[in-house]
Length: 112
Image (cartoon, rainbow, N blue to C red):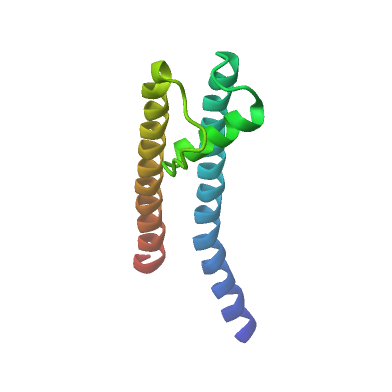
C-alpha cells in the first residue's frame, strides 16, 4: 500500500517536472542558437574583430543588459538595437510559452 502511494507520487512528480524541464532545455538551446546567429553575422560582416567579442556582444545585447563596453560604429548602431529587440521578443515569447505550458500541465494534474 505504502509502496504504491510512493510510486504514484513519483509518477505525478515526473509527469509534472519532465515537460517543464524539457521545455526549459529547449528554450535555453534556442536562445543560445539565436545569440550565436547574431555573433556569426557580426564576425562575417567584419563588424567585430573576433569570436569572443562577437559572442559577448551578442549575449549582452540579446539579453538587453547592454554593458556598453563594446559598441558598434555609428552606421551599425541600429542593428545592435535590432538584436536587442529580437532578444526582448524571444524572451517574451518564451515566457508566454512556459506559462501556457505550465498551466496546461498543472490543469491536467489537478483536474484529471
